[in-house]
Amino acid sequence: GAVVSQHPSWVICKSGTSVKIECRSLDFQATTMFWYRQFPKQSLMLMATSNEGSKATYEQGVEKDKFLINHASLTLSTLTVTSAHPEDSSFYICSARAGVAEQYFGPGTRLTVT
Amino acid sequence: AQRVTQPEKLLSVFKGAPVELKCNYSYSGSPELFWYVQYSRQRLQLLLRHISRESIKGFTADLNKGETSFHLKKPFAQEEDSAMYYCALASGGYNKLIFGAGTRLAVHP
Image 1 (cartoon, rainbow over the protein chains, first blue to last red):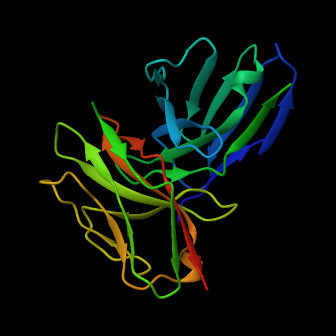
Image 2: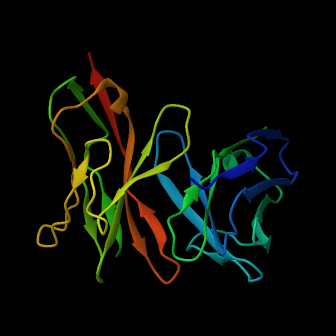
């Protein structure tokens, strides 16, 4: 099946700094990528949907200036958490889809803000 | 409002017992529903979708529009079925997924 990777798998950063998470589709071109957030023992909450070359569409309650999403190519989307705070600590998961095919999920990135 | 409800956080059964993981949804249009599975330390992966009406790893799920349900069933649970199961609803033009809270299935020997 199609493979989606995320980098880094785990990152620790200091409060007030920014951190970038990459999501790559390794063997297919992803017209749409999705970013989710998962708190411990909770479900995935969609943060935003991004299409290559377009601005991301954010879900209600998600701060677009805090969570910057860039989908510059058909194989790469990035999520930048700006001015991170401890409450941003979470598990961030991306998924990618080509056309109307199923979504393929990345392994996730654990962010810890100290 | 679009919503997916999985009422059970944990379902614990013995090997060989039947399994039913419940999922109810709220959606104004024609729903497209999925079951995803996450095994320990692995990524989320698609188990089955209602439109394909297939059986994967012995699991089946039938969409019941009258009861707005999409319960996942397996007649004889195996230990390797132990995992986290999420029911999801596709919504919107980009078919974004709305996930339920998930049910942890624990199959004991």
